[in-house]
Length: 117
Image (cartoon, rainbow, N blue to C red):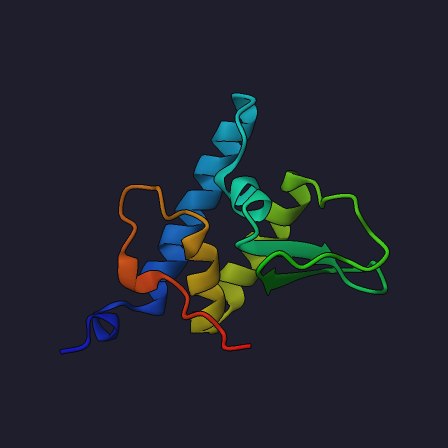
């Protein structure tokens, strides 16, 4: 039986939301949030949209063409929480879950599948 078949989107969603909660506590303690660490490592990136009215999540070390300033954690966390609560996209949930691969409860089968380039 495929291990991934046992993983529900709700499991992923809960894991990511718990990770965001933990990151908020880390920030309060003046520690680097795990999400920001994942961005620094080039595993994912949260960027402003071209019209600067929203945010977009992309895999890998993407760089905005005109923007070099990182999106503040509080803004990312608010937006990601809304996205996670409302998405049914399994790949998005896996990408975000991978930012928390050092947290208790991480499951290796959640790791995103690399995109062939």
